[in-house]
Length: 342
Ligand code: SF4
Image (cartoon, rainbow, N blue to C red; front, side, top):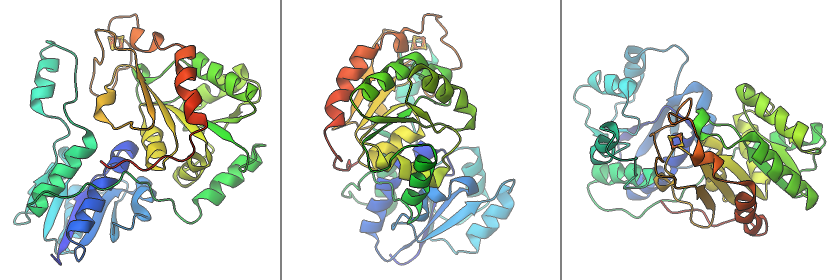
């Protein structure tokens, strides 16, 4: 196949990273095809250095579907692989009549319906990355070997991270533990005091500790640095480029269910993930570690919530610091892990 395949996945960080194995499978199946990736401008760096992407079509800030559809049409696409499947990509497909499309479905309605009817908590029946892969198989029309979950750093990413580490008194060549206490939703956040406890234990073992987060999460990093003397708060100091470089410098990474958690696994960095109101069965943690308290009400949501609807927040509060430290300790000495095959 020598045509042009336009892949759409505009956001978010984790979802884009999870699409990497599907892109690898597509490239292996159709090595002659031109793969064009449609993504929000601010996230372009996530796919820019992926060798399985030939061209990036950035969705500009404020750009409407008609304009973007015109730019897709100018590429004379053979097919659209819609790994986004939300209002924006649905509109685009409508604006591209005659272009065959294959659509990814994030969740199976048999998984979601009982949750919407409040009959039971959500349980993912399939890994998200496998759902992406299934869409590629549907496009190609045959079963395909799975690609690897791999994040491709750009040539300057490590240097950008190292500069930020040095500017904040850290040595990029000494063992470093990365903490990522943020997440888009409150019920996906393990208590900041417990992150600080992990930081204190790691510092006592001679590790350097740095906290990562965006500007809106700066308060979390500040509080951890206050409660764990020696931990360095890098919140708001790492752009997307430096984020990959930073995570790749870590001997291990501790995170909530968030984009940086996926980036860490895709870099082979041993990762301890803390899950509260969302389901760890959506993702592959072989070799890594995911903690989930398993309280009867969990997982109570697909994405997370702004507050616990039951008021007790046991899904996160039942995950204590000792348990997290026990899960993290073997990861600290494991070195880089093999990349996961989705
Ligand atoms: S404790 Fe239960 S109800 Fe509350 S946020 Fe967690 S999973 Fe949802």
